[in-house]
Length: 66
Image (tube, rainbow, N blue to C red; front, side, top):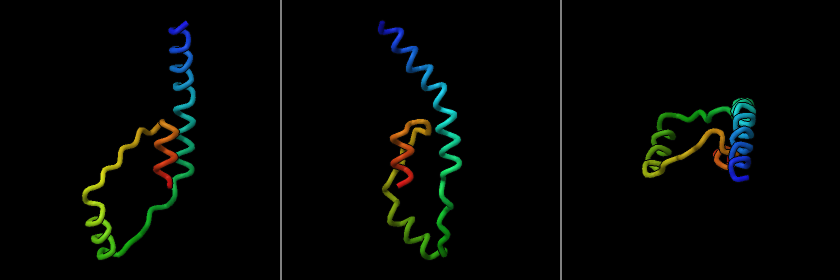
């Protein structure tokens, strides 16, 4: 039974991954354009931050869009 559940979710992931990648590509907003001075301020403020994203994880892609 455990193997059946495991293969079900692996198959589901194989089917849904391309759909999620296409929807991400279609719904990605335009990038923000800043002056070099404004970008330097943003870079300084974000110097100690790191972003982790798994492209086919629905939670990671939802949080990254906010």
